[in-house]
Length: 212
Image 1 (cartoon, helix red, strand yellow):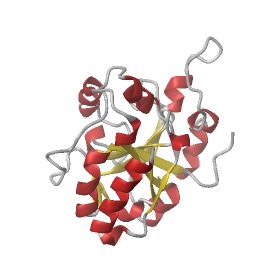
Image 2: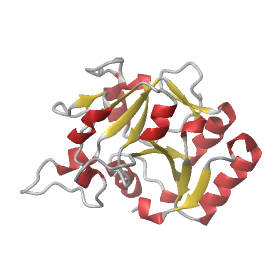
Image 3: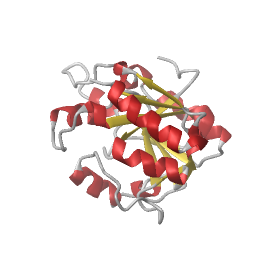
């Protein structure tokens, strides 16, 4: 599959983190001095710990904790694990929301970024920081609903989890859309958007196709 004309970026957060993001008008990396002290993590605790000690082999460098992380495709493996409680806290999908941006927005904001061709912690995953290297991503797998490894393709799960990382911090204006699982979640998001009215340019919707 060729590189998509419009590359979408997907960040998953627990809904409890949204108010802090809207109130501060930015997304920040885990090492940021303004990171919320009440940030609710939804990832695998041990993997988060391991990633915090690993340096990225490409400019601008630093560890994973120096970046705001996005997925290059929807329905990530992590969300499936959260839904089913596989090595993570089991949570209803209505508590998980998507912050969606595009690579075009990243370029407009002149962000420093890196991206991978698979799961960021895998030893043989490739890392890149130039747009022409998006061809190294397996877009057919990244955007597929099927990602389990098979005898014919024992590396599909790794490739599905390709990541896009933005260095240090980014303005909330980089987010184009917030997508949620159901009406209850949408009401929650919209009430916060009204409270923090500066964010009215961000669209909100229910999109069950992004969930399991």
